[in-house]
Image (cartoon, rainbow, N blue to C red; front, side, top):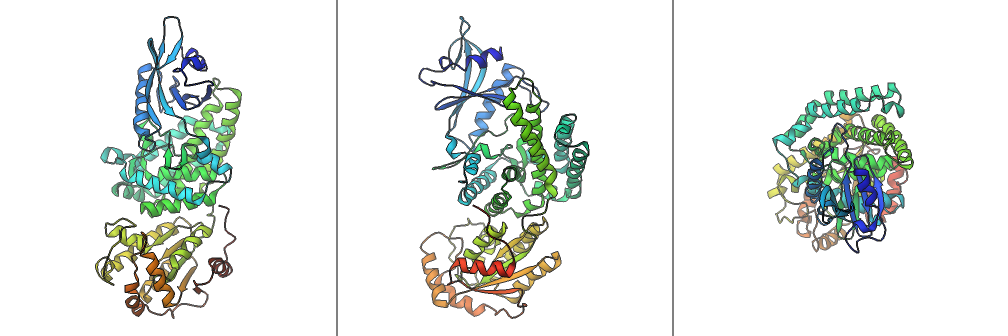
Length: 528
């Protein structure tokens, strides 16, 4: 009967009056999707794939209901409800109509493909601003997502290993079409060994409530950039253990997909911005594993479709290409980073332009930025843009708090370095002790170290501080505290000429960046 239903739904007469003049059908490994001018109707295919079972009408109804409820978290205005598919006595099928209920469908508003992230990327219009907005939206979503003992256990190394073993078991005899048997075996060993070797980090993530009820299928084609914000569709509704995971598993899905589209630079930028918005730099210890894991999941799903005799030829051909691409991406998880590991510290007086420089340098180096302003607000229990009125060196700006801030700065920077990536640290570094500490971190990690000291005349800095006070800012630096800060700044005399780079930030940013390219040795900026 399901074949009769889907064939019937290709006719506009099957839908409410005026809803359609043309109907397009798209098939996935688990759904039939019917695209109308303004609406979308999605039916579950009556399949059993081990990780899901849609073989009965009731199971499909429950899956449709779960899909609507769960996806309203990130797309509240898109998922309109669950509607019945009815069959009238004359044998005709109708959506949301009268007659015997023979199946169920999810009813959605149709979004314009113009805002879909993969389409924007293909057209060269997926900007850094878009990715920053996506990262912020996901960080907020994860912060509010459900957590608890039942959910948290799915982030443990034992449960993640269960998923890994299942992935490879379900693809034996199939994945060999896309990888050699040797490659598949080495990949399985690498993923399982990674879990074993970093079991402590996985457990720490559980303890720190980084395991949440997330999205589970966070890829570019499910993300829409709209005028009123970021909308994300199609979370996993059919198996809660694919949704219950470390937030890093969600984030790595999207970064992996950017890499699959040939944009490692954008993937690294997205990761860096998510880490900042979520105050979660520890994810760098797991992200390479989860990117490999997610790539293999995509290869598995595509492989199912590639060998599905029920799928049409064009669908199978596309799935075959995708399975090969994602399988190879899963193998490449141990790749060298885009830019070799290095510690670049950007410091100087308040309002000397260090954060502006760090932002641009982070893009050029594809590196995360760890900054004391956000750390201080986070440790103090404040929002990043919340203004804190405090006297110099008091309250959250006391010497004791500053020590805690620099402890956290070093810890976050080290998490990034251990993944083999470069890291930027943005702080005033006003004392010799603060500079020595970050320099020692680089030395112990056996990576290069540079300290960029941003300088500008006092009058310029004070003028910048006056302007800063007119709008929300992560920094609480104000003109009235400049002199006290300047008096406490210890001149940089302890660093070698090779390590110490002085920049006049009254110059054009482009000129300073050109100087840094020569001194530090990184290449031209990646395309945006």
